[in-house]
Length: 108
Image: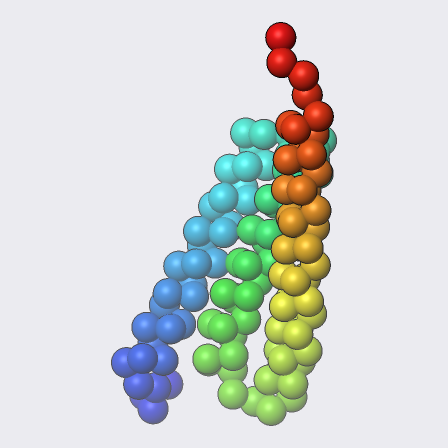
C-alpha cells in the first residue's frame, strides 16, 4: 500500500465517505419512513444502495490487487452501473408521471 499516491488515497477515502453517507441515508430512511410503500421511496432507497456499492467498489479495487478478485469486482461494477442506468430510467418515468398527474388535477 506504500506504492499508492496521494490521489489514489484521496479517491479511496472519498469513496469510503460516500459509502458511509449512502449507508447512513439508507438506514435513516428505513427507520424513519415507509419507503417500500411508494415507487419513489423504493427508487430513493435503491439508488442510495447502488451508489453506495459503487463507492465500495472503488475502495475494494484500490486495495485488492489480486487478478481474480479484480475480475469479479469489474463484473460487479458493470452490474452496478447497469443498475444506476435502470434506476435513472425509472426515476425519469416517475418524474414524468408526477408531472402528468399534477397537470391533470383541477383547481378548487
